[in-house]
Amino acid sequence: MAKSTDMRKEKKKEPTKSLKEKRDAKKQKKNDRSSD
Image 1 (tube, helix red, strand yellow):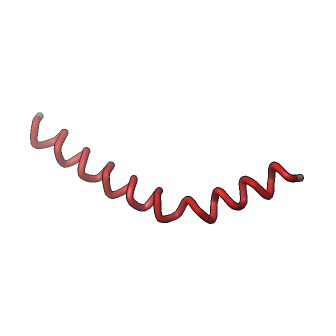
Image 2: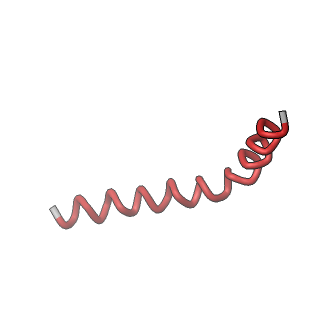
């Protein structure tokens, strides 16, 4: 039980980080394409 609540807390904290990661990934893709 405690584990699942921990996971829920992580998910709540995550969004902002994952959003930034998504944007970074997009940048990476653009860089990969331009270097191709």
